[in-house]
Image (cartoon, rainbow over all chains, first blue to last red):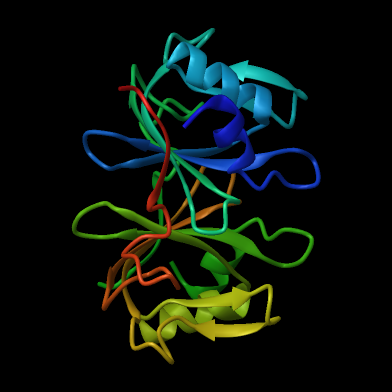
Length: 112
Length: 112
């Protein structure tokens, strides 16, 4: 898809953002959920590394710019109603700010 | 965790909801994103099958009640800031209303 087409394929919310699920390409491990605006998606496509929109800092955020834990993007998918992205990536290190590999390190309920 | 504890572990949004990423337990395939309120989470824990909150119909939704494509829950995880759940499940059939196995069947961007 061309840039115009993939920006149009996304249903941006009222704040111009879309939630993004980051998944480790090799293992399938779900790493984190973050947000992108159109500029973050464009920068991600251009650089091949994940860029997000930080809602707390209100700024573009090149994941790993300080920690070195960048995410090399393999592919980005969009769901059936266009309002969620799935980013498959090779992370250079832990995705979570706690140092855990995934933000989902806490088990809530199990079937056993 | 007891029911009181796991309901408290979740940061429900202003509408009393939390987004839930449903992932196929065996393959790691990300299937869909839906919403739960506390009652949906409680019903999911009690029944072992995924219950969500339908924002369009404004009602509890036993996934697969009509289609038969229920999701047998293996575990539920919560992320570091408590505002997103990851539900690992064995789906009885396609997760997407389009008949696709996953809602993320559309490729937006690839590195090739």
